Image 1: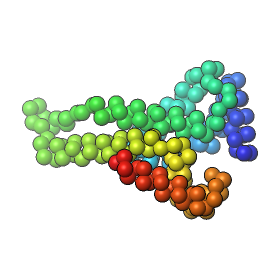
Image 2: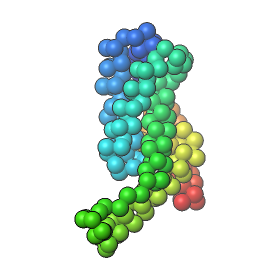
Image 3: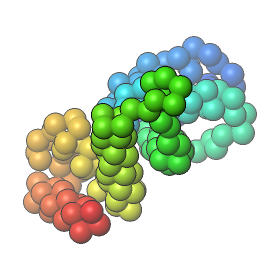
Length: 180
């Protein structure tokens, strides 16, 4: 609750144009956002670009952003949307590496392209399946597998019993398996 209050105070300061508050919010969430973003793709440059894009947009549109938001959720959802957009645009672009004029890489470039496309498709499928889960399910999975928290720590964080926590994660994984 204390963190949410600090976040909303920073949010209001950002809306008023306070650059220091903007930097504080960035410093506060950069590592968590990066960890969150890496669950959708293994391309760390893409995740870093997406994080920077959401903060640039936050600064650019600070006068028109909503006043009453849960800042952490807003940042996570914005990052997720930006990553999906970037992954979707990547799957549309297919490039062939040309070794020299008229001489194309055949075996290794072809294999690399197939591997890259397969990986992108798997990551996009996983991201799509994750997006179909509830926020609570995604957050619980993030805490369990990205933050490596125990069930006890997750149940405390979410304010639910240990049994409910285990059930939530079990059902979330079951739902993901069904969609994949």
